[in-house]
Amino acid sequence: MAGFCARCSLRLTIAGSGNFIAPTLQRRKPEGGEAAALTALDDELAATGDDATAEALEG
Image (cartoon, rainbow, N blue to C red; front, top):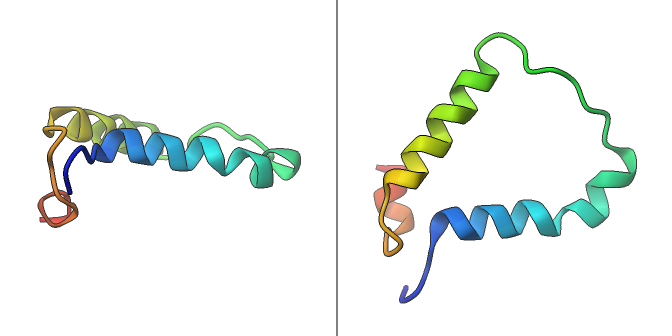
C-alpha cells in the first residue's frame, strides 16, 4: 500500500482509541518483561521502512 507507515498507523490507532478507553483506563507499572518487550517492539518497528507491508512485519 503506497504511503503506508505501520508505526504511524499503530500510533494513530492507539491515539484514536483514547476516546473509548481513557475514561476507564487504570494504569499500572509494567510487570516482568513487559517494558523490555514494548521497547524491543518499538525498536523493531522503528527499523522498518515506511513502505513495509503487513506481511513483512509479521514475518
